[in-house]
Structure formats: C-alpha cells, structure tokens
Length: 198
Image (cartoon, rainbow, N blue to C red; front, side, top):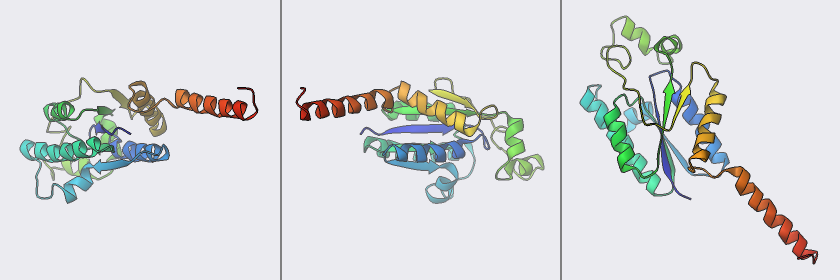
C-alpha cells in the first residue's frame, strides 16, 4: 500500500495531538502502518537543543518533514502534529513529499487559552514566556490545505470523521463502500459457481 503524510498544523491547544492519536487508531484498525510524529516528542528526541527562534523552529519542522518523507516513500502513513507556524516551510514539505495531506486545526485563540493543556498560555500572559505562537509571534494560516476542522465548534469525533471522509474523497484511502461491494460480489460469484449456477 502507498504511504503518505498527514500534516496537522494549528495553534497550541487547537486539538492537533488529540485528533492525530484518534486518527492513528482509526488507520491501524484499517490495517495500515502508521507512525505519529508529535511536536513535543520530536522536540525531546530529535530536535533537543533547538530553541524557539524562527530559524530553530524552521529547523525543527525540516527534521520532522524529512522523517515524514522517508516513512511515506516506504509505504507508511506518517502523521505529523506540530504547530509549524510558518507557511513557507510547510509548503516546502508539500513540494518534497509526493502525497501530502494538510489538516488545519482551526481554533480561536480564546478557546486555546481556555484549554491551555500545557499551561504555557498562562506563562505567556504573566510574562514568563516570550515569542509564543499566536500571542506575540505569528501563526500563518494555511491557504492550500486539504481540510479545515474547526475544533472549537466540532466534537473530536466530528472532526475525525471529516478528515477520514476527505482522505477517501481525495483517494488517499480506499472508499470502503466500493471496496466492500467488490469483495461481496466475489463471495457471491464464488458461491454461485460452487452451486453450479455459473
């Protein structure tokens, strides 16, 4: 089976990691080989020592994209869940990875601050952290992505279903309905042959 890359981008707290984990489970249930590259895990293991300047952020995302490219071309579905705030570096991966599916997890900054899963927004607002994406450092929304999920308006299950349906529509995944119909047709034909009707 062909590999490809699913790239989640969005503000911290927008639901990237939650949806990525849900999607991993769904794809594994379909019998696919999947690897998740979560931004926090990558920072600890692959990009240790990098800071949060634009250059360091770009380098971090370059490394993630390189791993995604290797996995994808070897038949694995690579899922990246990184803020990846700058459009040019995301677009450069789109140009390098043959099958690239970008998911924009759109969520208002107010809702992200309310969720604040890592407690970082609290630190930003108290002045402990500077140059934080969405507050005092820009987040450049994608413009040519495959799908937007509005995680402050949809349940995680609704967002996941939208992603799966779009993956099928764009032929990243087989449409089970036509696939299952062919399987069922073969079973019926084999049964009719065994009974001597064909």
